[in-house]
Amino acid sequence: MGRSGLSFVLQLIRRLAASDRGDTADEQLLTRFAENHDENAFGSLVLRHGPLVLHVCRQVLRDPQDVEDAFQATFLVLVRRAGSIRRPERLAGWLYGVAYRVATRVRLRLARLRSHEKSIHGLGETASVEPSASPDDWYALHEEVNRLPEKYRLPIVLCYF
Image (cartoon, rainbow, N blue to C red):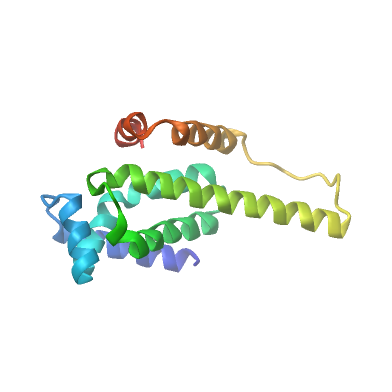
């Protein structure tokens, strides 16, 4: 999904923001979506938790298209598992963990792919321009936050991400 796809998602989120008063609990929205396939409930959840998911994906991944893919994949997991989330009151922490795992898998897959391409094309020691080490620092931070027990991870996610 390119820039136009992201702008479509952002327009959708803005439209939902105008209609969402934010007074419905995550548990209620999740139940409405899981049981009735209520698109407005799902939209409210995306609106509410989308910035968190996008933030995590951006800090683990470098390429904007990979970020968009991880963002979408995270919410696809929510669509598939909405009815089986055991602690819906902790949805933010659950989505954080899903976003982190999805983005990490994408990052590892891309690293393997780059390594494979280098070995095939004999690029080995080719000079390349690496972006700032900052994404690696963010990756390490998210890796450590993800290792925390849920009761410690959730406050950090809610306060800082």
